[in-house]
Image (cartoon, rainbow, N blue to C red; front, side, top):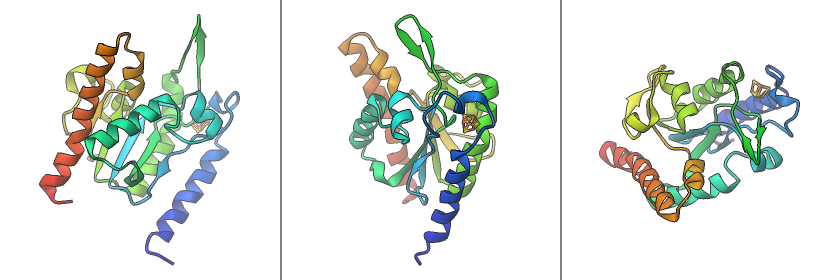
Length: 205
Ligand code: SF4
């Protein structure tokens, strides 16, 4: 048995419990729980908002177009996706039809209900650095007064004392209307992700 096996076992047990969670109504229309994925000994945890349609079908976080954008940005920032753990603040897919769009947005009660799983993941993994992707994840980590566009890319402590910063969600890049706007948003995203590389270089980890 490797040193990692007990941690892996505890994580598997946590994921099994989340699979049958019925603590808020989001489980009903969703296909399945989308729990976090990645190395259980990862030093970096990325936290998104909630699963999208592809994630709902495949049961894995960040496997749709936003996931592809994240992969590209991580690679360009010099971060190996296989070495990070990726999860969401809310574990079931939710959308509301608005015209031609499907807006994903768990309400405050659903976010509060699901917080138990994120807290359990972070408590188990004990990462050195956390990145919140998008405003919903940033507010979950830093409190409701956090303003993403003003405070993104600044290292700070989470409410429970971990090193973290927030940046945009990769889907924000996809929503930009022109290729110039998308390129600008993408460059800013990569610049923020590089903070992880600089921090590791400085600390020697
Ligand atoms: S969204 Fe979270 S709290 Fe609600 S049922 Fe799913 S796992 Fe449970």
